[in-house]
Length: 302
Image 1 (cartoon, rainbow, N blue to C red):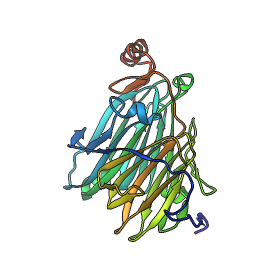
Image 2: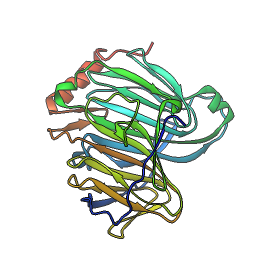
Image 3: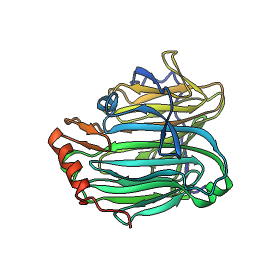
Image 4: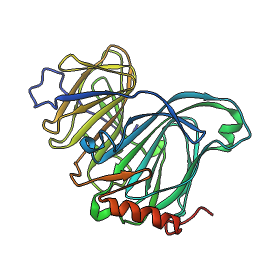
């Protein structure tokens, strides 16, 4: 593919300063978002969001088989303010509509990147065709914080199709670069602050390393398989590894194939107050967000 670059990353014996594994967090339980998304919350702004900022929430919907239906499944009209939502579909098909006029249909490998900013109302539903046929749904949704000076930015929407997401080849696998840059390959997502959001796929027996900027927040969420860190600890499916900001390399090895989501970003070290669908800097701004939504100032779906 013209979108693929081949690079050789040195194995675990390299002396480049590693990012140390600070914490292993296991996603537990499952709850429904609307009637279309059975998710486990991997982390939220109420717990690890302060450590992982600008990444303030991650929900993962593990594979779930839906029976055919004529009924629309999903999550209906609801508001957001102060951050962005990023939805990555691995299986199934979703349809999005929002009050900024944004919208689209995404399927396997596609991503929707919605900027709530000053305020937006949206819905996320299974497509009619997927509902009627039934099938497996698997997806992840990430919330990305905005710095105080950009929380009132105009809302917007990006449909990012799989065909536009380039791949960087690494030793023993590949990275799909959704946002940011890796090994000279730049992802298509437009972001407000520097970050890397990448799908990681490792082949069985991979012994590799991921290079990331020192000083950045870094985390790896394993969706399938198991990876071993340089210190011998392992991350299994449904586990999140949180790494030190210091250091510039995460060494990984695995026996079987692995699929994971890599999150790395320049931190936003500002006060953060979240309540429900709003994430701002002060309690007063949260109260204002509810008032603005109730008054219709975030728009409505047509």
